[in-house]
Every structure is written in structure tokens, then in C-alpha cells.
Image 1 (cartoon, helix red, strand yellow):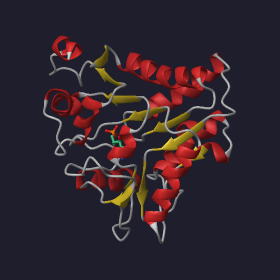
Image 2 (cartoon, rainbow, N blue to C red):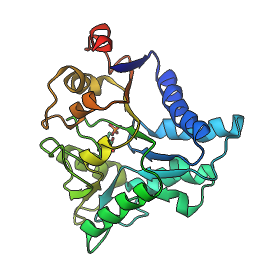
Image 3 (tube, rainbow, N blue to C red):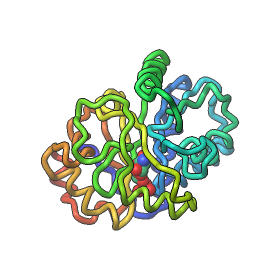
Image 4 (spheres, helix red, strand yellow):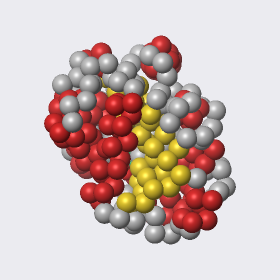
Length: 249
Ligand code: GLP
């Protein structure tokens, strides 16, 4: 298993941002998937700061969002679209056609999901997917129990996450939040994955993801089977794992 442990938060952010920048430099027309949340915001900001130093070509790149909150306006502060626009897409000055994300609202999410994954394929498939990790092991909005064979779909919001989003964005109680996400099977089709996790609150689930059985109870455990997945952790998130043993597996 490929496990990288960064000793400080700034080393962690720099290592993760360099994975994205490295992918763009290696393949300027790359298709790169991004996740939102507390772990990735600084990583995204560092990407455009790095571009000020090294003027790499972003004119052919596609970024896309792994998942989206539903039931809200696309400009809603807690929508993944708005977060990614603010954190990385707008500062890089990308064109609208260089950013794909599932809709917050649709009369037909099944078709929207099929169109979204078809467009990713049309652009050559996913070169790099940077994944955050939910405290219960979720990937995107694929909660524990999601079949490993799932394709992009309209799912439900994890109650703990919903509470946090409502608190951080002052969402009125009458707005019903949901989620739409790439499925586990879509995630596993990415040619390369970097799973990023930092902080004490991720320590227990990192251990279950890496040392536990591959099980739908812990969606992220499927990544043990991906042929090119790097687990990029900070020392707090890695505190409970036996790194030397895992690196040999
Ligand atoms: C949410 C998002 C995921 C993200 C996860 C981790 O569930 N839908 O895409 O990976 O949170 O978020 P955080 O980094 O804030 O812990």
C-alpha cells in the first residue's frame, strides 16, 4: 500500500497540492476530480498559489466535483459547486466548460448522473481523483452500506454532515438537503486516486479503512483494492496505524 504521512499540516497541504499540479504538468488535458470539505480547502488554494510561482498550462484541463448537495441554489454557500468555484476554479481563471459538477436541482437526477459520467468518459476518463474521507468512512455521499457496484446516483445526506452544513451555512430548517454523488464503481474507475485525511477525528476511521476488512460498512475500505491509490495522511490521522506493516501489504 502506498501511504504518505506528512508531519505538519502545511506539509500535508503542500504534498496534496503538488499531486494536483504534478498531474496537470504531466498531462495538460487531464481530467481531475476534487472533493470539498475542511480537508481540501487549503489544498485547492495552494494549487493556484503554486501557479503564480510556476506558470503551468491550465487551458486544456478539466476539473470536476465528486459530489453535490441537492435541494439548494447552486450559489448556496454550502454547495460544492460554489465552494470549488471560490477555492480553485475562479482563482485559476478557468473557462465554464473546464468545470463539471452534478446539479443541485433536477427533475431527473438519473439522467443527470448518466450524462455526467458519460461526459467524463468523453473527455478521456478520470486521470486523478482526490478524495476526502468521511468520519464514518464515506466517500462522496456514498454512506456505509452503499453497494460497491453503485454508479452515480441521488443519495441521502449523512445526519451528522447535514447538521454541520446547516450550522456553517445557516440553512433554514424548511430547506431539505440531500446529496448526489459519483458511485463507488465510478470512483474505482479513476486511473489514479489520492485519498487525503488529516486530524484526530479521522484517526479511527483511517485505521478501519486500511487495516479492516474490505466491506461496504466502510466504503473507503474498497480503496485497498485500487491499483494506484495513495493514502496521504497527516501524523494525527495516521496515529493508530501500523505504517511499516501496511506499506509491505
Ligand atoms: C463530505 C463531502 C465529501 C468529503 C467529506 C470529508 O461528506 N461530501 O466529498 O470528502 O465530507 O469532509 P471533511 O474534509 O470536511 O472531513
